[in-house]
Amino acid sequence: MEVTNKAFKAYDVRGVYPTEVNEELAYRVGRIFSAMFAAETVVVGHDIRLSGPALVEALTEGLRHGGTKVIDIGQCGTEMIYFATAHLQADGGIMITASHNPKEYNGMKLVRRGSRPISADTGLKEIGEMAAAQNFAHQLVPGKTLGAVEKLDIMPAYIEHLLSYVDVKALKPMKIVANPGNGGAGPVVKELAKHLPFEFITLNDTPDGSFPNGVPNPLLLPNREATAKVVRESGADLGIAWDGDFDRCFLFDEKAEFIEGYYIVGLLAETFLRKEPGAKIMFDPRLTWNTEEILRRDGGVPVRCKSGHAFMKECMRNNGVLYGGEMSAHHYFRDFSYCDSGMIPWLLVTELLCRTGKTLSQLVGERMAMYPCSGEINRKVEDSAAVLAELGKRYADGEQDHLDGLSVAYDTWRFNVRVSNTEPVMRLNVETKGDKELLAAKTEELLAIIGGEEA
Figure: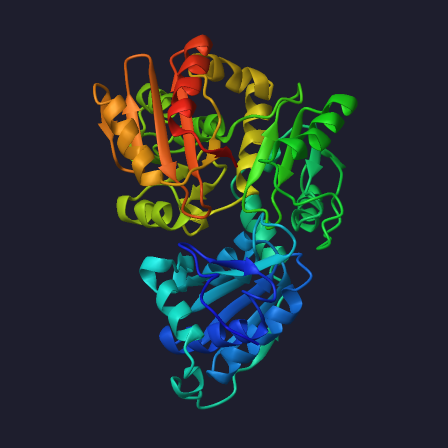
């Protein structure tokens, strides 16, 4: 099998199987990981993709040949690798997943001790270069002894940890539509349901790597209707959908309206500030006004950070942040080893619904009216640097910020344009202070300058 480093991205390994990601690559990553991090114990697992078990087997062999003990937790979600690595005090964890990519893809997410992410800046680039080297077999000294393998069911400990974020006694009966999209969230929801007073109406809850209902990615507009339809028909209080490895969840209110992740960040900030007044709350610079206003009102300390999970996690650790959220539906928690979870957010929201007696539309509707946003708009452009330069000139009279791409703020509206870290596209976000007509006009104006094709 040919091995290249084409699949090594900014935060993870992700490529087409078996041309860019294959068993030989997985084996080599295992050998390199074992040596680079002097790893005595590493947790491994895989999502629902059909190539996952074979890649785990090869990865395990590579780790063992380096003398590393492997703890195999089987089919799981990415956050279960994060949890198990920290909970078991392992030296690292490797998840076989390609997240929300099409079914022909697979890849890896790597963390070291304490579930600290391994990105291009902290070793992933070097791992890729070593794996693709022609003289790979001569680079590494074999382990003194062959590492052992232990199969472990991490689910009970993981479920217990998830439930620690809410007061189960404060929860009241409600009807929830749960759509894992044939990804890995189904078994977790089934286990959580045993401890919760909720009625779950599930659809597409059987893990299936053939993706019979399409790629589990609720950010795609055509994928949202399946959840919304059941919420409408059942009169549910809440709808939840997950991506394939369920490190993100997406919420629908009782009217079956999709709630942008931006407003959930503000909602969870409120929740955590009630628990720990004066806490530090982190958010990305794409959309900020709603979150900033909530923090001013509730006495939170704002911490802005460049978007991307490796940056966010490092920023949280360095600044002692309690909770951090990205508008892309990644939510990070100090007590979850500063990692992102697609289960903790909806549990917190259900507790808030039960405590306040309000519907989700009541909780976020006022905020959405105060700070309407465009939602993220993606465009494929030939020269992103030229586009950013042109926008910088056109809007030179605004308050500019370059923390992540280009942000420009005026009194009544602001925007952010950035180049994606994971895809060849530019991402635009626009927000205003309560003016939907201005939002539409400025969004159209900016898209005319950016040009390119829809992505």
